[in-house]
Length: 221
Image (cartoon, rainbow, N blue to C red; front, side):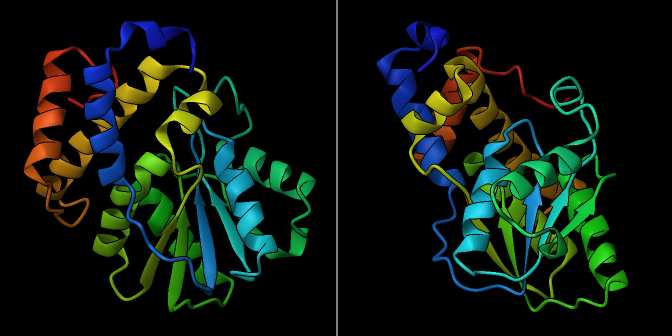
């Protein structure tokens, strides 16, 4: 699971799994009018989007995302551009893909993609959000706040924490990201960025414990 696994105790893994499971929305996949793949450091989002397209779950796929400090080195021409190229390699036809290359955060992913679809004459009733697994809940809460008149279905892969850590190769980083995304789930409604989400007491206790243990590299100020 990566070289950093040795620094994480079994107790910390149990807490991380609680948070991981909370982030997953558990939506049953069903056909959508359009899918929006949220750009990030994780090219697996593009692979998952391509697989879902080949299952004929949507006719149009939007890749959205510019760059962030954590992705500029890996995706110098922007997340959405690189995601599109990978999807083409995986057999998604070019005519099924739209690219939104400017978004710098999840709110902009939603707003700029909505504007792009409007300009293309597409008015979806159902949107599938494809993201990193631990980003499902935050993406859902953001979309419900900024685009409340569409039905949201969340998708990601792989669904198991251990398998995801293997794809990333850095266990410490993944736990930091789990904690950081839960901070955003808690904080962003206060800032008007997302709807509020109920957080079970055991998940909140796991989160607070991991903060005390130093898993905070992905925190926002």
